[in-house]
Image 1 (spheres, rainbow, N blue to C red):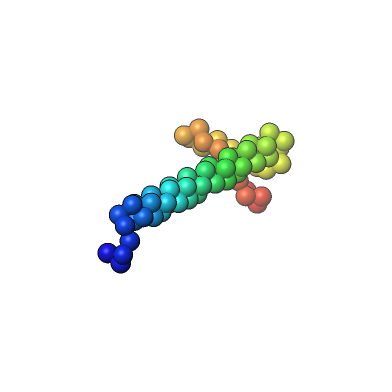
Image 2: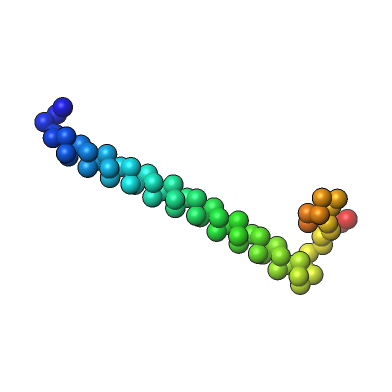
Length: 68
């Protein structure tokens, strides 16, 4: 196969698998950081009465618009 030894092909595939795994982990952790940032920002705004909100029938927080 193109004059490449099986060892070189194995190392190339191993490096590609490591790169894919790294990128999947990086993207997954970034998503968690974004969700944590949004959640903590909303909780801060609620604690300091900067936004209007109410609890719905399921106990979840619902943010109200200003004209309600």
